[in-house]
Length: 362
Image 1 (cartoon, one colour):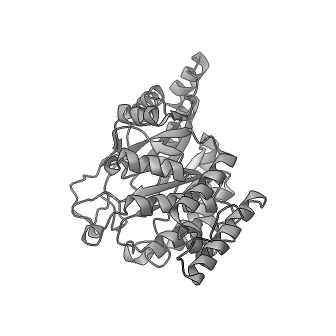
Image 2 (tube, helix red, strand yellow; image 1 turned 60 degrees about the vertical axis):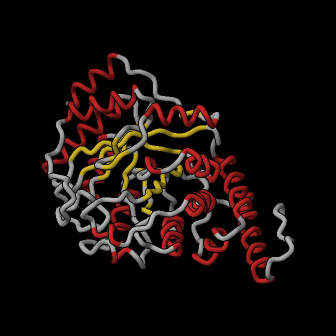
């Protein structure tokens, strides 16, 4: 065992717990990716002394990723507001008076213009979000055209449209969809306190449909809604015990939204607690990309650096994430330069055949 746990002054029970967690994480050096984590195991790892926890996370991170490279993605709201779901954290729910007005689905060419801007800014993945409970069949043609057009630009494609049927997944996959985002938000125990118009099982059913349709999964959660540390850990264990881990795990810090019910009980996680969660995600899901998502505009450079050390290796770039703020691209570039890190390479510029494909998709 490479981490010393013989420090004086610790109670025997705490020393034993630290040693047990360290042994279990040591086993990751030779074991295959696990999907049988327990909440108790995850809690032991989360509670490791902070240097030991970050060391374990970094060790695992370096086996699967370049620790100096950060994936960059851009997120665009292609249909904003008016959602019939009652998610207590969301500014786009029709149930709450948050000042967000319902809009129509964007035109395909406008979306592709934004995708070109994102690629010019260095993004490698373009994500499109629509405030729906689930997409209507009459909207699927336009969404599929958007996916095909973005794919033709050489960008990875991702959409989040709500719950999906197997037939809808098949259409999206045929259009060239790479990733589908569908967050589970929080733990099974806390979930009913923030959403009543759907269940966590509904979310898991869509994830299963996406997997069965051959599309990669982007799935994470939100921190700072009034949940406990145990809820945060249970959320990650839910993801880490899926038949296959999500390829992308976004961790969101909830943004204060006047009019959203969560506002009454929200409490942001401190930097150390959030970094512990990032490290736990990295250890439980070693091959997944862990993304710092919403709430990054409120994080200091030092907090973000700590999260990168803990195993985060993806960010959203651009000034806006759906309806909330995000650091400017030049601020992100300055931070990465300060840390001696770099963004993942942008895809090459398209040729004439790609431009023709974009025209056809529109």
